[in-house]
Length: 242
Ligand SMILES: NC(=O)c1ccc[n+]([C@@H]2O[C@H](COP(=O)([O-])OP(=O)(O)OC[C@H]3O[C@@H](n4cnc5c(N)ncnc54)[C@H](OP(=O)(O)O)[C@@H]3O)[C@@H](O)[C@H]2O)c1
Image 1 (cartoon, rainbow, N blue to C red):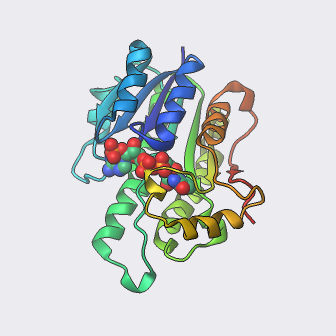
Image 2: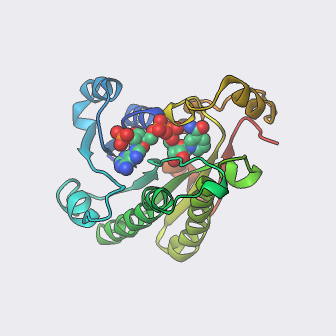
Image 3: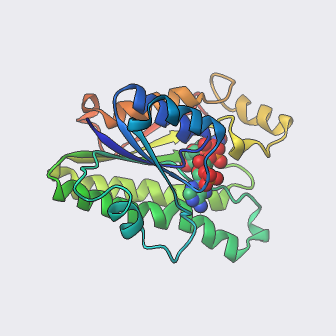
């Protein structure tokens, strides 16, 4: 039985990743600030395979080692995978940049995932297991969209972090990859108007949004031993954005 830490499990992509993972026999340790009805329904289907803790990853004063790796998971439980999925999108043009909002986004999207990676790798070493780390990045890093420069900068930082993590820990069988996701229909993209969405989808080869299932299945493939030669990569699941 393999144990996976997933952030942002309450809704959107994280919820679908949790569903695919538990259906393939993984035990999910899920984190978000709140629980949704959809998440609760999933949890009740296989309660022994999905554990949940409310953590605000934007709170700089939290001791993540203590609350996640000692109180929630317990270091004697090996963590075989970490999916860095929770993120926020502070969307605005650069001339409106607000340093507090930017700082909060970097806290959730960059600093927290780096700290969680630190303790996941320590857990893997302590328990002598190999592992797979997957960060959810965004196609905005590679294509550019008006209003997304600050958000894209957080994901660019994560892509660089992932590549270097792969180099640093590969010898111990610890892999690190990013999934570069295209625009998906979730709460995060709800603020977009129909004409904005149409323009975004017209920049894809498939002329449509990226499916949550396609991204989630790729995440779970990267978690598995079937992907044991894949590390340090950015895997694009983006409807062929051009
Ligand atoms: N949607 C897109 O078009 C798109 C495109 C490319 C990449 N992505 C990436 O895909 C991933 C999932 O995005 P999504 O679209 O599924 O977003 P979403 O629907 O907004 O869900 C975000 C998840 O993160 C959690 N979360 C947010 N802030 C948190 C905090 N401070 N502490 C703990 N948990 C927090 C949320 O739970 P709570 O609110 O309960 O805390 C929720 O479970 C993100 O990394 C995003 O950047 C999204």
